[in-house]
Length: 272
Ligand SMILES: NC(=O)c1ccc[n+]([C@@H]2O[C@H](COP(=O)([O-])OP(=O)(O)OC[C@H]3O[C@@H](n4cnc5c(N)ncnc54)[C@H](O)[C@@H]3O)[C@@H](O)[C@H]2O)c1
Image (cartoon, rainbow, N blue to C red; front, side):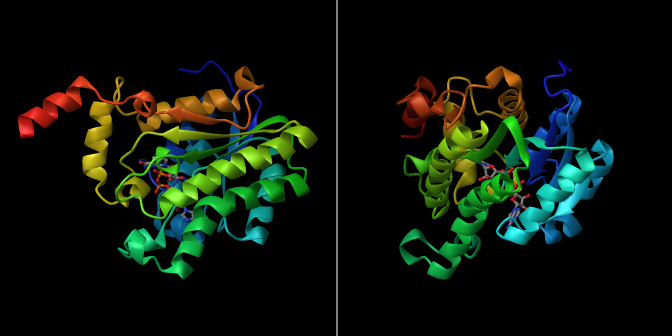
């Protein structure tokens, strides 16, 4: 159902790999709500993933880019403004990857070269994106920049590994750049802290299935789906939230505020 919340707006969506991706749902809903968009992902993801099919369906130009590369990012913003016919109103950073997790390195045995890559891909890319956009003056006044994060930035979850540190840094960039971007250009910057979600990146987290089940039982509303996360992103891109900036917004069915639920108690007693 469309309320035309993004009518006339231009957006860039980074990170749609397949139809499980949170960015995929955001792209679909943004267009449904009246926006025109471009899509970006790594050259290899564009070649191997399903991004092209989404581009065709949404009539969205695909601009391949490694989000750790400044020249690539510049290309995304310049080509997006050309393709969409003006400054950008919203940007989604939906990018995360830990080579340490992929290679099964434990947190007390990290490879520091790989840690640099985790931080660069999953966090510094957010700063780079905003720095490039601001220098190009590519985002319109009132524009909205969002990144997706997880509560492992604040609390320790076994198996989350160096992604926890990347998320802490990502959220900090949201606040620090949010101040500068708001002050100078009236652009808002927020992060959305999402429930565990069964996507390609999500499945890479150690013990994901157990954590998904635990979070489901620990959240009064249950885990938030990728689709409901996309709904929240749309509201954050819309003019309805024009005074919200520098926030880390929990979208997790209540998980972040719970201590213990009856469902967990019953599960524990049953298994004892
Ligand atoms: N799935 C979860 O449980 C969960 C929970 C909270 C937050 N998040 C966050 O949501 C975001 C989206 O992840 P998802 O769950 O939709 O998984 P996903 O695997 O579908 O998306 C991750 C994307 O990052 C892209 N990417 C990786 N390296 C890149 C690079 N160098 N340059 C550009 N793009 C690159 C991938 O190609 C992929 O499209 C991530 O930031 C993730 O950490 C996910």
